[in-house]
Image (cartoon, rainbow, N blue to C red; front, side, top):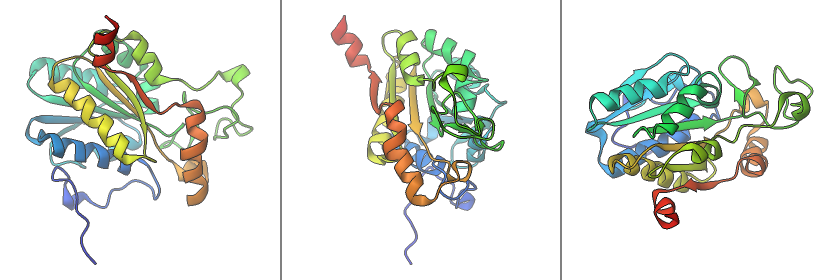
Length: 250
């Protein structure tokens, strides 16, 4: 059997990855790795990952990497970028790290238009700690802490991260939402986000709809249906904000 071709920036000795079977993190990271390779920026890229399931990516790439405290990946990568503006810094996290404990850092980095790239995997639950309700849990979705389904009346609706970031960023920002159900598009968004940082334009943010069959308690067919049909009902796929849009609007 032929050995699968992996991006050059991947560390072959750490594969296969340690994520649960069916987890979407591996696909998001594959899209990111291919984007790094195609842009030829492996030697100047620093990758930072959050606590949570995303921490399993700390040895994923053959690039300089750092694992941060929970919710603190964005400011750590901001500090590295400010210390050496020539570097390409990537903050990788889950929806808990970005929209819950790390929300203040995400919001303020976006408002300051920090020239970093943030990639957030949205699997609608706190996966590593057992599948509790998260800011992105959808109405009527059952989790460990919403066993009867999320009630929007008492707990609100799922957070629209890219829309929020798009609303508070200034000119030069790039914001999009992709999905592991369309890897070609997701890789394109990752490349645009990284290129935006390389061009010195402004804050770049990608949300990637991801899967968690372990905590969703779904088989493969139902998992893919949830990703392709259910999640996009609440999380619209596409580009939310681009530098070109800002220029055309001015």
